[in-house]
Length: 120
Length: 120
DNA sequence: TTTTGTACTTACTTTTTGGCAAGTACTTAC
DNA sequence: GTAAGTACTTGCCAAAAAGTAAGTACAAAA
Image 1: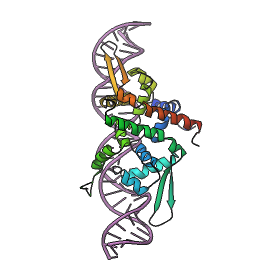
Image 2 (image 1 turned 135 degrees about the vertical axis):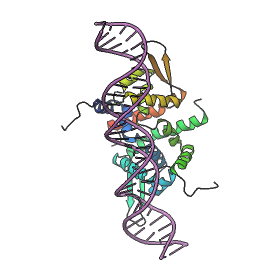
Image 3 (image 1 turned 60 degrees about the horizontal axis):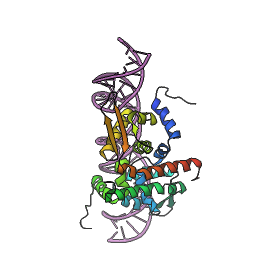
Image 4 (image 1 turned 135 degrees about the horizontal axis):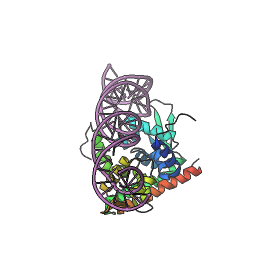
């Protein structure tokens, strides 16, 4: 046991929510603006770093690398680097990452329906 | 396509991404930590403000209200207020909000599988 | 020889989000 | 008459996320 802030109820509550709420559990892993977008790009197959960069022109390189590293640390994708010059690095989904595809596809489907006006 | 801007800014690219990428389109509406959690709570039926507050103890009132208002503005939920004292306010999903249920349920399912170790 | 392309990294600044605490208004219960 | 419950609102400040811009290393192409 380390030092806990006894007065900070929100932090205690967060741990509770993490255990109890399934959506909270997932949001800790892909709960950011960019991560589902990156996963969507990888859902259609492996991509090189530069391919991702071009496919998501609205993201800065800093954000892209940062999120790729976090997704790798969370075991959702794998980075593969070939020791050549110029560098050749590919990213692909892990099993857990592939497990997210139903979520990502459901997201895409909602957008298509929304643009069709299916919810009007 | 016709004319490309050699120095396109992130904001211009964002508009492009918004039009082109379905996941980006959705992330503009529910791409935050709390929104899917709120939608998950409403997926099991209408809830009063205080019920939501108790169901999501890790959120502050300020954040809860703020996100409820944004979700309402984005036409994902409806706020219904009865003119009584003490106040009686309920929140429920719109058609577009209900359309998100497959996404939310897919999220929950991933969590259950992940906790089972299905992706190990 | 300068440029291009690869895949990053770093330092700095701005913007957004979030947390804490207090206040509002009104009524019923104790 | 004080507290509790309802559904918020407001202000201040800290923390986190994101944007900007530059730099790194190396080789091949122009």
